[in-house]
Length: 304
Ligand SMILES: [Zn+2]
Image 1 (tube, rainbow, N blue to C red):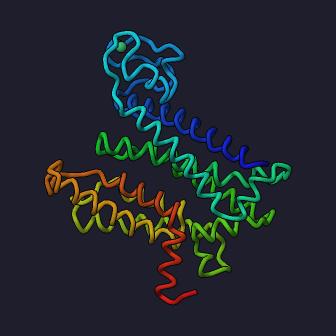
Image 2 (cartoon, protein in one colour):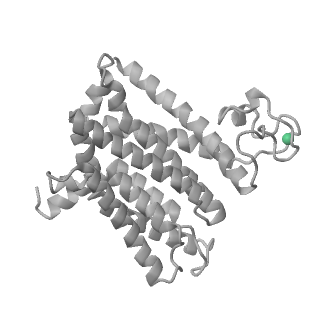
Image 3 (tube, helix red, strand yellow):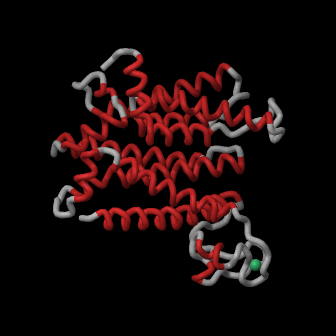
């Protein structure tokens, strides 16, 4: 398998990301309007004309149509193509992150191994987590509400996913599992005898309780009721000790962004802002660079 195949996988994942981003935008819009999600055909929001196939290609239709409806020629919102592009980019980043690990580089390049699909499972799981967090965050930004339904989908997939990885490893020990949990972090990072899944459960409890106590202490002024659940979900998929990096980064990103919004006059200091997107951003940054941040921290603390 050559680097050309690698590029092909990147391109495939980018397009897959834009398609899923496009679908998720539809899910968000129709959840807001309480419309049927699957059966309603795609249409122009202004003239109601049904979209033809070539007008319904994520990202590219917007470019071909120069941002206007092909029927009524009114401007189409740029938010959809932008978030489709973002999802494509995030999918590429997920794969890029896994390729940073030497074990995954060889595992993905070797097409002949029957383990290939199993090796790919963590990547598939992280693509799903990314989609779920995108869904929750965009809905939260638009409506200041964390939708239970989206969160449940996230919790169920992560529970099944992480439990399968744990069981696969238990009955068919593989090298990748150790790599996966060393960089993502787990309780086994400190206590090798503790099974990896407990690191996930510990991450869930820490993430949930930490944000829940802030909601209690501030009487819900700083964050909403849904935020502890988002933090619990991200804590579960990251595990211990990455959950600490995640909480730390979420507060830095949220603080900087909140400060910037107040300075730029877009927000008054007492106005409510959605904290969910900052949790998501903190979680994704931890996924990408948490391992490096932990290494720097342990070096500073002289723990090797
Ligand atoms: Zn139109």
